[in-house]
Image 1 (cartoon, one colour):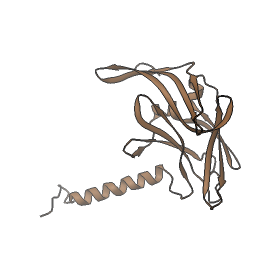
Image 2: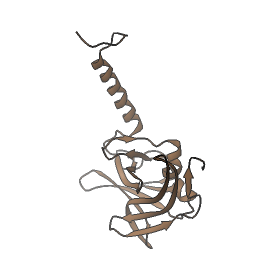
Image 3: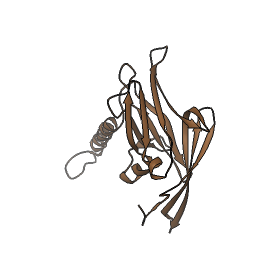
Length: 196
């Protein structure tokens, strides 16, 4: 006899239904086009093993999709993903995207919040084998460099094992050529239970 709940639905049917809902949510939250690039660069911090990845949605001609083609999401060490909550978007979100042809200029919430001045530009193009590519560029150590990733150095204060406050110390930009630059947090560096 099948294991059924009060409504008469089997556990297997419930699991299948939940899996389908999860799949639909993933398809609406993240890109489904074969041309999209899920990781241009990522940001991690010393307090968390997860990373925020930044990707780009592309048209069939490898140009950015509409006015806001750049998207971002958490990727955990087990490979699972999720969207950022409202508080996390204050640090990792994008404040503006400006699309011009195959180029996108970005401004980050964190850069403005922490008093950091740095521009980031994404360029897209078609490769010789017909695929799409996109690269992120910024100034690292005074030279325009393809951005690989960034690390946020934070100090945490815990109470009964739970983080109640973090202080952003600096942001380290790392290029694909391993060139790096450390940017010190200038303002609004503390966040937590009783802080914005």
